[in-house]
Image (cartoon, rainbow, N blue to C red; front, side, top):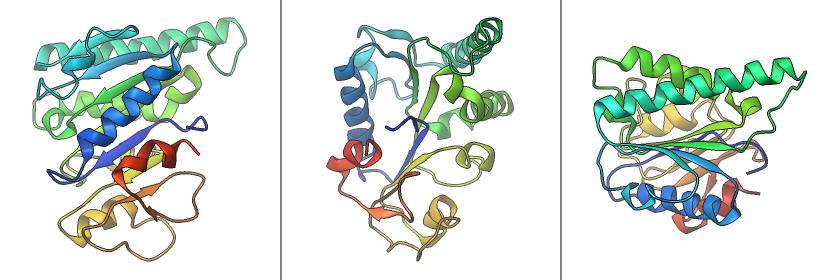
Length: 208
């Protein structure tokens, strides 16, 4: 993934989000040496990975999700403390990938502001600490993916959307023409503008 790990996957039901997400997880697991925090509000999408080697936490209810995100945020701060003490600019600890299967669930509860605060700081600062977010959502709006999080997602996988507004929110600030409604696109730092993709090629696209 060329060091650009924060990834947003957005698309309507049936557009291939779960397939893309699991394709990324399987590829990372095959590399070995990585660690994972899995946030699974629907309780079924990431359940199969909960006992895998390297899984630090699996969270599937409101309380455990909050605890998992607090754990991630505190881990990032701890790694920065170690880096400062050792005069390092990048952590040498294993990469930690935080998968959030459905952002809309997190944005509906009373802890929304706290979730946004922690996740926005992880997307902004986590790369040096080797902590990265992979977020999935059916709803590509500012209420669900605040700009402070969206703008720090280096890879954006924009699957099928129902209207131009959703594409515009995800891809509108990038060069090139607005993509065709109903198509899937990916944008990474290696690209000049969004490129049309097949969902089976997501890992290859973001791992150039």
